[in-house]
Image 1 (spheres, rainbow, N blue to C red):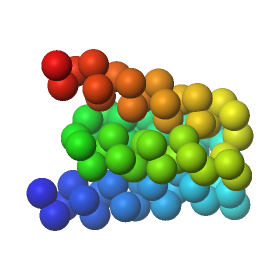
Image 2: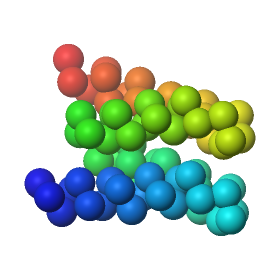
Image 3: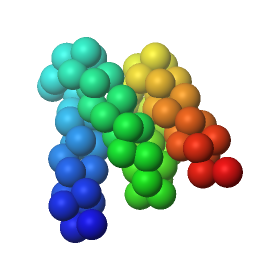
Length: 73
C-alpha cells in the first residue's frame, strides 16, 4: 500500500504541474482514476477543487471520481 500512496502523490504532482503540458496532466488524471482506491478518489476530488487547472482537466477528474464511486457499490 505505501507504494500505491507514493504513486498517487507522484501522479497528483504531475496532474497539478502547470509547467507540464495539458496532455501530460490529463494522462496523470486518467492514471489516478485507474487506481480506483479511496485515496485515488480523494486525490481526484482535490484536483476538481484546483481552480488553476483547466475546465477540461477538472471535468475529467470529476468523471474519474464518479467512476470510482460507481465501482464501489
